Amino acid sequence: MTRQTSSTRTRALLMAATLVCVMTFQLAADEPTQYHRDLLRQADANWSFMESDFSAEYTIVRDVPGEGQSETVAAVFRRDAEELYTILIMEPAIDRGQGYLKQGDTLWFYDPDSHRFNSTSSRDRFQNSNARNSDFTRSTLAEDYEILSVERVRLGRYDAWLYELESDSAGVTYPYMRLWLSDEAQILKTEDHSLSRQLLRITAVPEYQQVGGRSVPRTVYIIDMLEGAVIDGQFVSERTVLSINRPSLAPLPDSVFSKTFLENASQ
Image (cartoon, rainbow, N blue to C red; front, side):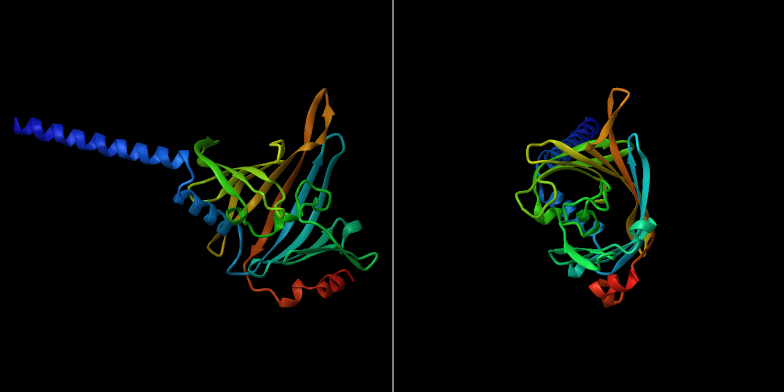
């Protein structure tokens, strides 16, 4: 009788523990708990470089249905802690020497032919690709967006958290987003929407690389849901693939983040 009672109590305790775990998991999935706010902040930290400079060579391939592909190669330099970045276009030859300089909220585009700096927007397309200028700066999702909901989902072979995010900030490129995060707070996929919830763009990050103890995207796929062409009776979207090569966390000279740097580099 004692053995049966002990066994019964053990099963009851296990069932209770299981029920608590299920209820806790369901609560985490149903509403934006502190865990999810922290996970979103960690995603920002993973996507940003606040404790070091960052530099890399980006190969940007744009695929336009019916027209073919075009390739841009750019040197990217970032100092996220000071809201700085410089981008120097190296290829194609016709665009060589063009560049971008971000200092705080101000973004300039440099044209070596006219030797002029013109103000541009973080929302603008980068070199006519499906990437935006805002894709090259630090991530501020936790600052800019409110979490509407969180759901546990499966994304390919990954278990992921699906966030619905909304922002009323005038500074964001997209006011509504769906964001897929891994348990390690790595961005796996985003869907960018207009205020009316129209899907504008899909971004996927299928692969990361290790640099100095940090995980940095190796490739980023961007699908533009508005730009494209009708091929054989079906709409085919424009696509852009970003390949991040030779990433480095080594310190950069202050002079890199200046107009003089872009002017000299184009000569």
